[in-house]
Image 1 (cartoon, rainbow, N blue to C red):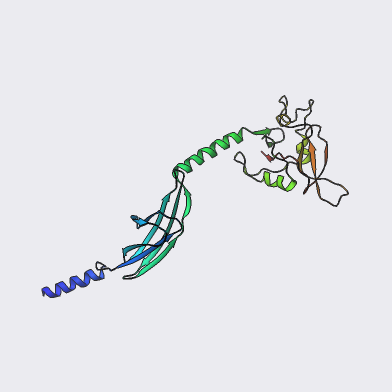
Image 2 (spheres, one colour):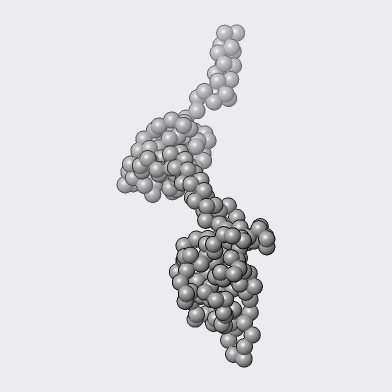
Length: 240
C-alpha cells in the first residue's frame, strides 16, 4: 500500500513538472557588456561571442539591457523555448531608446518651442488669416517652399503658401497698414526692399515653363518666378 502511494506521488510530481530537466541558452547580442535578464532575473552579461546560461526547460523571456547615459539606453527582447538537455542559440538585436529623463526633457523642450512659435504668428482678423511672423528663412525654389509650409508650426498642421491676393494684403503701404488698422506691418519690419516672396498663384505668360507669381513686399509689384530655378523667400499662411 505504501509503495503504491510512493509511486503515485512520484508520477504526480513528474507530471506536474517538478522533475524538469535543464537546458542551455547561448545568447549573443549586437552590444557588449549588456545585462542579460531571463524572466526578469539578472543572469549574466553579453560578450564578444555567446554567453551560455543553464536554464530550466520551458518558455522563457530573454531581455538585453544596457544604459548608455542619462538620456539613452539599449534594449532588446525575445521569447524562446528551451527543451530538456538541449542548447538553444539566440541572437538579440537592441534598439536605442530614450530614458524617462530624456522623454521629460523633450516634452518640456517641445512645450517651450510651441510657446515660442505661438508668439510668432500674426492674425488678420478681418480676413480670417493667420500668418507665420518668423525670421526670414533661406531662399527656396517653389517646391521647397511648398514643403516648408507642409509642417506643423505653433500647433497647426494646415499651413500653406499664400495666394497672390493674400500677399498683397500685407504689402508696405502707409495708407493701408495692411493687416490690422493702426498697427504697423510687422512683416515688413523683417524684410528688405528687394525681398520677393512666393505665392501659390499661377503666373500667366507666353513661356513654356510653368511660373508662379512672386510678390515684392516693398510695393506689391510682381513677376513670374520659375518654379525650379528661381529662389525666393516664403511666408506661410493658414485659414484661421
